[in-house]
Image (cartoon, rainbow, N blue to C red; front, side, top):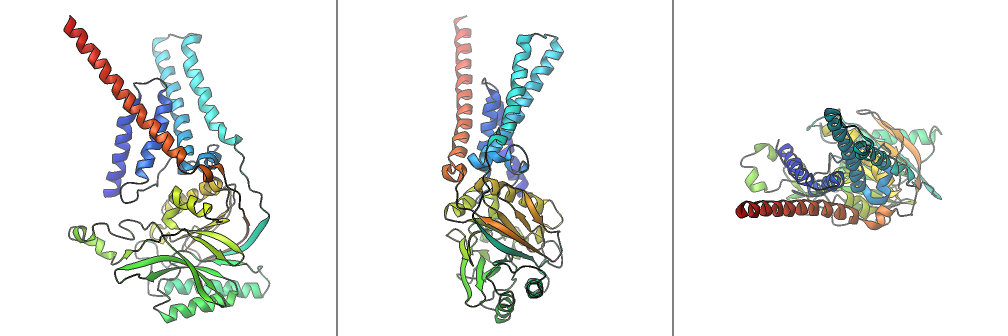
Length: 439
């Protein structure tokens, strides 16, 4: 309820700003910029923000989507909002003309112009080239070990989830040996695929090593690691080599507030006893998730982080040739969340011109091409292995190069439109007051 109230507050503020923007000519333009302003604030505040529910993420399989390669998710949001508000302007003009019966070419022109502009914005994305060519490829296998139950208590007994992923990987190794599937270069496990810290639990360490050695290639393992002190735990993706064992790792940079850490823990736990279910806070990582896994330089992004523009963009700009989203959707199983997260992966693929691989404990695991098309996907709450050949790309999109500049520019235009509307309103009231005094 608290999250819903905060999110509603952002939309209420947007509504107030949209009313101000109605005072200016060119209303659809200011309204679209204000949508970007609202999303910029909501994506960052409070506690790092909550980007879920952006217009861009609801349009990841539409003609608007290729615009992400030019200006990222904010440009897609702007285009969707602009097209929609232009349609609204045309509808309002048409309704007024219908009521007044004041039909004439001159009167109809604004509505017709708004319709044409709306269609132009919709179709503009079709003109944006989406590069997918690649000279290098890597063979991957995604292991979805599954969990026993959805919901907050998905873990079950200790080591159950790890056992599931080990068994699925051992079966993959048997299939490879029998020639039923080709041997991959890399195997990807999801977030929390080991429900115990292998560095403090020798049994977990041995099970992971058994699976990795059986398949004979590096495995990206999702684990919770104790530390760096007694009050914290780290959510990591670790490259586990069949010969050298655990090596390079990535620590999740953006833990989820009230899910992976508790802000103002001392004060809030006194009034919200349920927060005690999060006994330790997740410690945030400080670097991007670019990891050399076998022959491939992949960018690891853990779960919630795929929603954040900057984290994914920084990972690509740091040298990732494809993106891996390690996720644990079991808490939200059989809700819309796994589909929504997959939609974000589709947008990121086009935005950065990279293949995106989602590895989930319980689904949806998926292979998304650089063009945003879903090439493979798993079913929820099944044990399944996906095998695919994915392209490795080095080229940068315009969105990678310009970064957050389009978002901040559009947002500032939105705020300036409000400032101008307020200034014009005050000037109008001042003139009215002076006129009344002179009378």
